Every structure is written in structure tokens, then in C-alpha cells.
Length: 207
Image 1 (cartoon, rainbow, N blue to C red):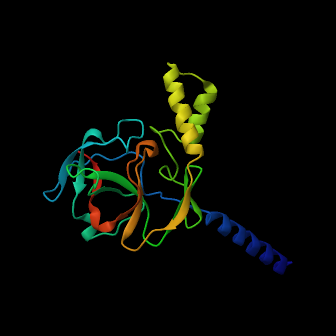
Image 2 (image 1 turned 90 degrees about the horizontal axis):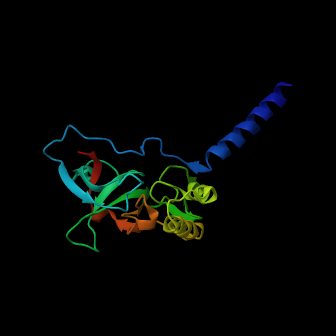
Image 3 (image 1 turned 30 degrees about the vertical axis):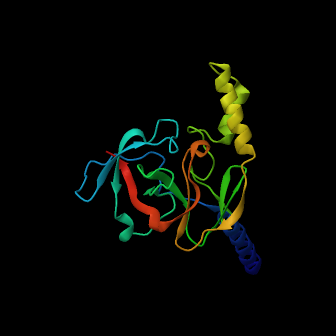
């Protein structure tokens, strides 16, 4: 009887372990940015005019954000970090984006959902968003059909059509690189790997 109980417990443990390993979570990264009141002399203030991080509340658009320029000289880059990087498309402004995958990891997109090393990235930034709505929320909005104007409904239809067919083959992030994506996938200018040498700081929050 004891042996049977032990075997049952062992099988159940394997099942639960297998289920937990099917996803990657990030409990430390919050959806909303914090306000930074204790600003030291080694931090800088940037007036951001960036809409690829917009989650529906004009996040990072026409706002002052606090950046720690030399943060990564002391600390490692983590998944979920919002970073400042040298933007090759515009020398006058640095880019702002979020770290999705780290060097050596395998990353792919399947139906607008990130997978890291074959596991679903089960976080708010792990799936596609357009102004704060993910694919399921946009589909629900279309079903309800409560739009103030026809062009608004068409915008949502366009976004749904885009995201439903958004797939990218798996790649391995090279050594010395990270994989990034802005929170608003539809407007994200930067999607893919960038060199860690181009990262100039970490965003700490709003001023």
C-alpha cells in the first residue's frame, strides 16, 4: 500500500513539474511604471516622445522618465527591463524598448505570443498588445461591436488580422545581444536582436 502511494505521489509530482515548466513567468516586472522621487546625480531625465511603448495611457509619450545610464556596468540585464539604446534610425534620439530574451536563449513568435526555449512567456509583455489590448481582448471588442465610428472598428479589424498572422521562426539570441520588443507591437520600430554595446541605460520610472 505504501509503495502504491509513493508511486502515485511520484507520478503526480512529475506531472505538476512538467506543467510548471511549460511557461516562463516574470513576477518582478510590473505593468505600470513607478514614480522616482529620489533622483541622484548619476541619473538623467529624458523627455520621451515614444509611442511604441504605449499601453493605452500614452505611456512614455510626452513624459519625463528617469534613466540610470551606467546601470548595466554593475548589474546584469534582466528579462522585462526597459532600456535606452542607441537608435541607428535617428541619431538625435535614443530608442526605448523592453528586453524579451537574453543571449543564448531561443525565441520565437507564434500567433502573436512569445515563446522562450519552447516555453510560453506568460507575462503581460509576452503577448502582442495594441494600446493595452491583447489579441483576445480585441476580438471580444469586435464581437461586442460598440464603436463610436466606423474607422475605429476598422482599426481593430486591421490589428486583429495582423496579429493573428504574426509568426516568426525561432532564432537563438547571439552572444553579446538581447532580443527586444516595444510594448505596443503594432508600432514597435525595434523588434529583434540588438547588441548589448548599444544599450546606454535602464529606465527606472517617471520623474
